[in-house]
Image (cartoon, rainbow, N blue to C red; front, side, top):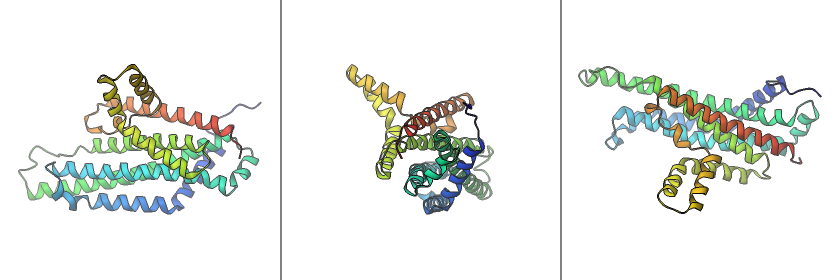
Length: 272
């Protein structure tokens, strides 16, 4: 029996085909344009900063748009790209060729990761340009206001964009895991958004369990912490040291690897 070799050309072919299909989808273009509009228009909302420093408000609004629309893209695109192959029966043609089911699943995951990477990269670059433009304008209009030098750390902006990409890839991998055994797109999307909400609120459950609930609550909180990722870990790029960023990266890839392996396991036992 031939061993499995990664990366194989067929896996990369499926990933590239997934990327092409995603770019053709209206949801990708719509979400990208909507997020770009919000990022580009963030400087016009600076009067509503609610006491926060102006540049920080613009950055928070930009990354908020990336997180919100990116989560929708990760769940919806992963679901549609997976189920479209089944509904159009093109998966039968693919699997009739020397394409393993594992290659199909991992190719889809790799393609979606690239799509999300394009989304986050474009928004990060645009946000950095908006921040630089506004910072330059402030330095020109208020020469004494920026006497201490540049306010925005663009390395932190790049790291924040990278961490958003990691978080969204983790979300996409868990959505793909659900899709590997689910029968409908609606159920898969609902579970994907549920994972997104629980991942962002996981720290609340852990704090509640640690404050005095019984042993059952502690066990449940521990299971949630192990099974589902804590998306709050990806939100504080400006306060994380490089070693912590590396730790979060390993944490993210561990979840992606586990979800990908389980998705392959489930899909290999699924009847199409």
